[in-house]
Image (cartoon, rainbow over all chains, first blue to last red; front, side, top):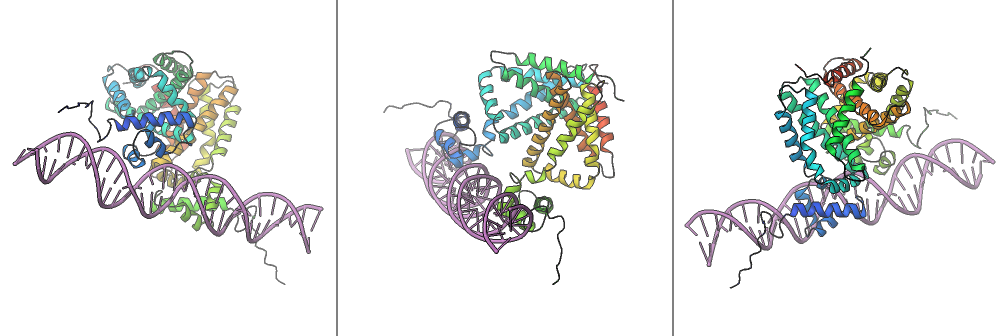
Length: 202
Length: 202
DNA sequence: CCCGCGATGACAGTAACTGTCATCAACTAT
DNA sequence: ATAGTTGATGACAGTTACTGTCATCGCGGG
């Protein structure tokens, strides 16, 4: 009686493991090959060895399959804000948080670039990206309030930090070779300070 | 032979005039009454005395019907940036632009509030709002570049300005009575300058 | 009076998304 | 082991947003 033990990580479904990950991979491939609009959910599911119905059990819609790591990112950002030294001002705490999540993207430079090219090519996906960033901004503002930062200031610092991230990330994915995302973010923060340091309001 | 001259402004379609405006009005009403998701495009068209097909000739999708004035807003913003005095820095030019479009909303406080309540209640609509704001940020950045502002600075000033607008607008629509949007924006700008001033907060 | 143009209606079709129930693999208790 | 339970999946029907295509209608010009 030969017992063929396959049993990899099998923490999931009844067929192959990691159905969610297979769907994400299949979607990234197909969106890259044929374009987002030309790809149907049924095709993604078929490439992943699943059905369309199962796709929608894992992801709320056709766009969400590209935005998996949102909660992890949010957790790390808020944790880093909470861990910033008491002496740090709001914007410094946000800068420290962005610095803390830099490696999350740096380790996946090529994948980040592929993903970003797809997102930038389709308005629907850009919309989803923007609301994800807005969610991160809300989380950052909440973490700042936990530090005792008052309200217009907390939201403004968070939004400014997300703006810095957007612009630095864009430049990072545009760079042809290997670039340093954290460095790009630090430079953008410095630019922001320079820009807002202009002559006081009338 | 009595000739009944109705003939109002009749610059549009073959039936009643202003089909587009009727669709916008019907949508705002129905989204408010039943909610966005519970309203079908066919219902909007019927209330406007038109068909579903005609709705999609005027608006790209079900969300766009709430975002009509985007181009006007963009034109006024960029014009105001161009018209800012040479002595003004990037952020000051953006502040002047926001100040210039304040009345556009101030005149329609009640309508702005109704619209905002609908948008905030539905993620799809918030996404659309965010991409509209991002489009405005791009336009602002372009106008700043026309003034000779360099590149990371132009985008950062534009994004910071849009962040100020978002937060001020949110507070303005939250206020119960009559509030001043321009004043809210000026205060938010001052807060932003304080937050980015480098020196730690209290 | 006819003719062309632009906006609308009518109708069929695709694909995203949802609700519901059956099915199947793994796990648990006995 | 065997049976029952649980959770993920498949199968299938249905709604609705959105698109392509052609016919129709009102209006203005020749």
